Image (cartoon, rainbow, N blue to C red; front, side, top):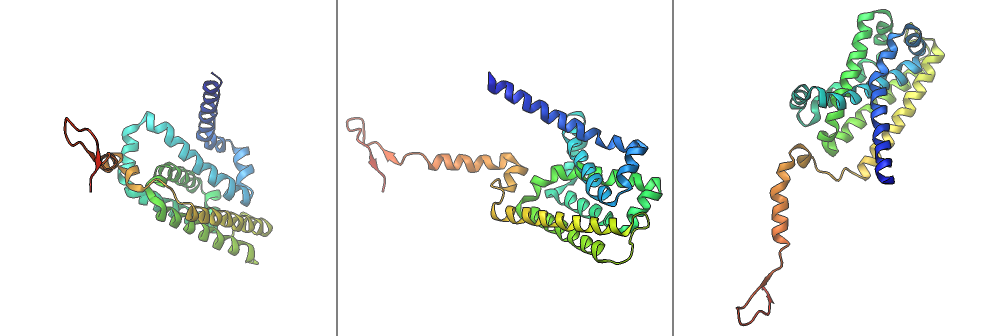
Amino acid sequence: MRAVVFRGRRCSMRVGLCAALIAAPLAFAVDPLRHAVESRMLLHMLVQFPLLLAAGAAARLLLRHVAPRTMAGIDAVDWHGLSGLTLLSLVSALWMVPAALDEALLDPAVGLLKYASWWLSGLVVAGSWRRLGGPLQLFLLGNLAWMFATAGMLFAATPARLCVSYLQNEQEWTGRALVVLALGLGGLLIARAVHPDPNPILPALNPRAAAPAAASVRLKRQPRYQLLGDDDSRPFSQP
């Protein structure tokens, strides 16, 4: 009984967390809160961007039940997770550009593009991650780590302001935080390389493909014995 109650509470916590993440982007519709986040470069890049990405990933869980055909169409285009990998890489590279950050603050249309691009990336990548397989997962983590490290060192080492909307000290702190984030992704990359995903990619893509292999294994596990006859039931091992 206690186990059932514990599982129910854990499920409720997961549902509550997903609901909070899905509703999180709506908070940026409130001007004071949006200004408080976007007026700081560190909060803009390292809080708002991951939050929008997580909101898209959480929305995928809801859309799987609300619009299953739409999600099936997205998954059909996302062959082996390559579409999600490409989309996340392009979106991350775009919003690492200082001019893009300035335009997102000055032009409302560009700001909406920022919200939509990060949210859509989370929606797609949440389904792409398992389809990528071990080598492509390592490639994605390595690409993001290298990108964040390069942008972070550029922000921290440049003596001039790269963004018109942010001061130089904010630029330096953001650059250092991006380097720390890159080191964290590098540690995750090493962990994934040392302890790869035990689940292969093909059974994840098509669970039925593993059925013949499992059947053959069961056949091989049958005891290799043979009966001599009705009068003598002593088994002997086959040569």
